Amino acid sequence: MSYNLFNTLSRSLQEFVPIDPAGKKVGMYCCGPTVYDFAHIGNWRTFVFGDLVRRYLEFRGYDLHYVMNITDIDDKIIRRVRDSKRSLRDFTGQYEAAFFEDLKRLNLRPPHLTPRATEHIPEIIGVIEKLMTRGLAYKAADGSVYFSIEKYRAAGREYGQLVKLNFEEMRPGERVRSDEYEKEAVADFALWKARVPDDGDIFWPSPWGEGRPGWHIECSAMSMKLLGTSFDLHLGGEDLMFPHHEDEIAQSEGAGLQPAGQRFVKYWLHGAHLLVEGKKMAKKLGNFFTVRDLLAKGFTGREIRFLLLQAHYRETYNFTLQGLQSARASLMRIDECLTKLREVAGAAKAPTVDNDVLGRFTAVLDDDLNISGAWGVIFDWVRDTNRKLAEHAMDAASAAAALGTWDKFDSVLGVGAPAEFEVPAEINALLEARQAARKAKDFKRADAVRDELKSKGWIIEDTPKGPKVKRL
Ligand SMILES: [Zn+2]
Image: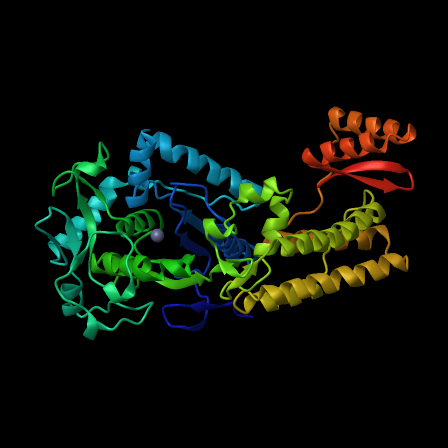
């Protein structure tokens, strides 16, 4: 079976064939966080999508090398650093640390490399120098270096490969210093921004004077350094298609570093937007959530991940708090099934897995990561397994084989089996305190203890063998 992905470059489904002649090694880059604040749930949709692409490639046996950059210098960061009166490293460091904490909470496999832009200034300057030598970049009167779209096009290159651009309406000769601009404002963009008083002490020396890199050139320089000048997959949110990714192509291919006949990137993949409660996220609408905000509401990283993995990556998805409640219920169905399987399997280890169901799982994901199809296969499997368990039609070996099958599913989805938590003494003491309160008919106290347990991430379950606590 071939694995097909929607390539924004060709606007079509294409079979995934690695550049590596042996068909084994795969290089992948995803634009990472700009560390000026906590990443919001929309950013996390893109990163979880990247993790799904990565896990599925690994599931399919590719030897993947995954790079995600940390943008620790850009216009927004400089503004915030100035307001915070802290050093650049100190300011960005806190959000970078928060990013990795959230990444762990959402159970993303950490990318193999997460390079910082500020640690690749020489490589960035190197690419700009190449563009200068080739006549595709120029120093303007403001001291900044810009990429010339006119020269690039005159050299027979196409600007506007990921998005359609109307050059008739372009105003030639205009320049844009800002990293973000609209399609209608297509213009020469900044590669190196000359130092201005507002930059404070944030600048580096360069052949064109003191300054700092533009945002787009960061990704070109770091991806080509760490993955080679021509690599397989480049991912990002659809909002990055223009200008960011378009500019990455122009700079990287304009520098002419690729082997003959090869592109900077073979497959461009873009994840769709996330709406929250039916609307575009905005702080003033009260629908702007970071992972931390959702954890504070009592949801778990696992539930957030599960919900972010519900829709196909190219579909706009409406993320809701109600959806998180449903995610909790769905995960409980999976957990109950796995718990029963563990009871039946006992110490048995199965050398086999259910290749039939895994074949169905692979077939749907091969179709441009059809995630709803994958969940369909999994929940059918849960239902069948529950039926067999109810009919006592499973012995220890077949239960162990079913657990092995689940592990294969979960290597792609990462929503996790219920972990066997050790219950801390403090939690057990609270459970006993609740029992004592109930015995004394002090229900107010019993409820208060239950709430305290919940705030610590534990819930009480009444079982035939008496109450037990389990992780939220
Ligand atoms: Zn980027």
